[in-house]
Image: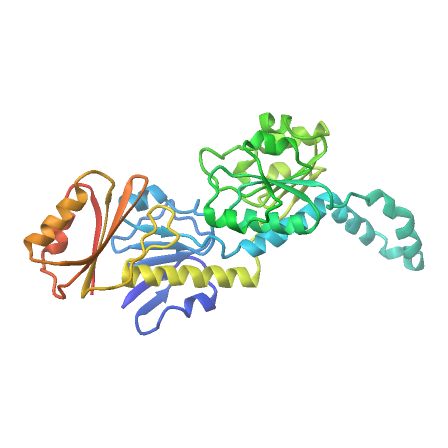
Length: 389
């Protein structure tokens, strides 16, 4: 029986993916084979010796100690694209909120309750204060053309906006999904300088932390509107507030508010609603569950943030999966041990990602020697060995 520990409430549609005959699921499990979570912070948590994988039902993994997991051979999964549509729709809503003073207009209308029959005339008289602009014909800059960025780009283009994007690491799959009229910029500064609206869709890492700062703001158009539905730390809030005070920035919409941006004119704080839809939570939970099952039962890896993608159909009697440092002679050392035990390799896959390599080996031998796992683990640089029947 494989054990799954849940650290957050996970949608039942996702939990039901796990066959009850093979899996035990609970938040109280102390020796889990895998952990399934959403936003729970694991940074102060001791990682159980039994832990083989962690799946985040969502895209961001800042709440997971990635480096510690990698050193222990623990595969960390996320669910990119599962909540993309939900975020896309909120980005469009954010652009509308930024372009027309809808929130202030609603708040003002609520104050007219006591005016009775005068309300319609007062609305007509006062509405001009809350005017704005249309999206059609405006230029939208999208920083990051991944799952969400591509969806936003295509919808914005359909709304009649001119769309330019910047992403030096765009994948072929994502490029194929972009509408042909969308222009790719060669530099982030070139992209930002043309935009009436800017929306961020890049992951948070050292290279992107504080991406929107005084320097970047200086190249933007006066009256630009900035949207952040990616991660709060991508933006230096004090620099944006200064930009608003100087009339450089007309509006900042953020899904990651902290105290510094609350009650600031020109800033619309949204309480992290990007993926908060029923459909998104279901999609993320199902995707995370399926990835854990395929890894625990077959050793296949899809959508890992710290291990390479490695997927191979089962062809042999027994399967060996090995994670190791990406250094020379590792494969030859592993295969030598198999040869010494007269284990024939039916099929083999070797993949690497940065400093980590991952091997899937299908064998013709159904009965593995009792000491095989320990022999492979004794190779310097090996992080994890699993033998799957």
